[in-house]
Length: 344
Image 1 (tube, rainbow, N blue to C red):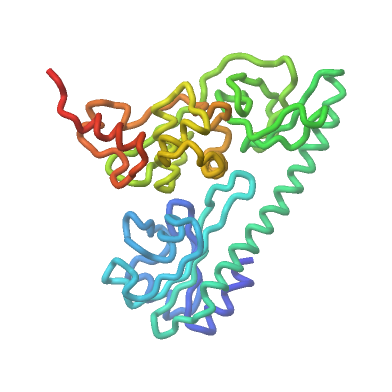
Image 2 (image 1 turned 30 degrees about the vertical axis):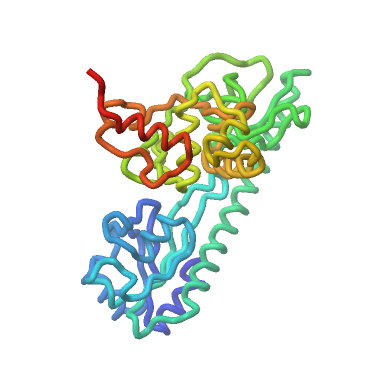
């Protein structure tokens, strides 16, 4: 599909097309021979990593870092060696989990830069995601058919079909279980908003069938939060790392500091110093829950995970600054406590 949508344009307009994985490692290129040859002189070729951390601003790495289409032109590149280039990149997402699978990029020398390249590469990424959604729906249809075939075996017991991301795809009776659930130990799920661990019969692609009465105990998902020295916290869940916005970083730190949970009013006071901003709190928590699927419970707001964080380690915390620049009352108070001279 990428070849069909972009390669003729790339060849005719002296561009090249690049596909990179979620780490920014280039896995495929194609386009005008002269441009492809020039790209090899700057290592913009398969096997090389072009993450923003390693190379600075560029169409591949920056699209991954900000998670939306970007166009980087000439001197907007941080690296002096690539300022003769113009790059447009768009991330491609897994429709089931929402995680970034990789980036499609169209690049050229600045003299050949085309104003429509960003729109073109964005449309290509949308088209690929559309195909992936179609394939996912076909897989879901097969799973639902298997679920309803098995459902009769459990008599009147309630049951539900859960995909690998914790979404409830089917339920008997309807509405018995709502998602998203969060994966715990292998083959178990934690019900959203509760501490109950549900045992599932595993199906293909990480899906499972949960049956009423089959519950047990299992370790919660492990979450590691890095919030020292950066206004945007990094959250690692099951080996996958997300970088949160400054506001969501503050919210996550506050919930980590209050493991028993916080009401919407308490969170409003700690975030905005205003107990009336309940709607703002609920909206922000809703957005954060979409990023940390199944990991945040409500009533009260709290983390459903085994949490470890750099700022919870007193020795490490005193060597760094907690969310520098953050001004919410709760974070400022904790930052001051960690920066205070140790007594004794």
